[in-house]
Length: 163
Image (cartoon, rainbow, N blue to C red):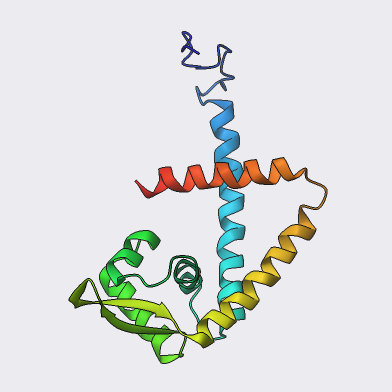
C-alpha cells in the first residue's frame, strides 16, 4: 500500500466536509464520544456492584490486579493514568474495604505490591462473569470473528492511547 495525494494509505479519496474535516474521523470521534460516555456510566455501575462505596475508577484497578496479579502502586497509576496522590487515596480506600492488600515486593524490599484479597477476587469475579454474560447476550447476533476483531481493535486503540 502507498499513500495517495489525499493521504489515504488505501488508495481511495477521503470524504471531506465543507469545513475541511475528514468524514471518517468525524464519525470515529462521534462514536467514541458515545462509547466513552456510556463506558464511564457502566464503570460506575460495575464498581458499585463490587462494593457500594467504590469510586468508578477503582473498577479498572481491580480488573488489572485480577488479570496481572501483584503490582506496584506506580505501575497501577501509570496503567490507569492517574497521579500518585489519587492512586494512594484509591488504594487506601480499597484496602479499608478489604478488597486489596499490600505486601513487600520480593524483588525490592523497599517497595510494596498491591494484590487482591480473596474477598476482592471473589467480588470482582462475580461482576466480571455477569458482565461477560451481558456482552454475550448483547452481541449474540455478531459473528465470533467480529467480536474478536472488535476486541483486537479496542486493544490496539488502548495501546495507542497509553502513549
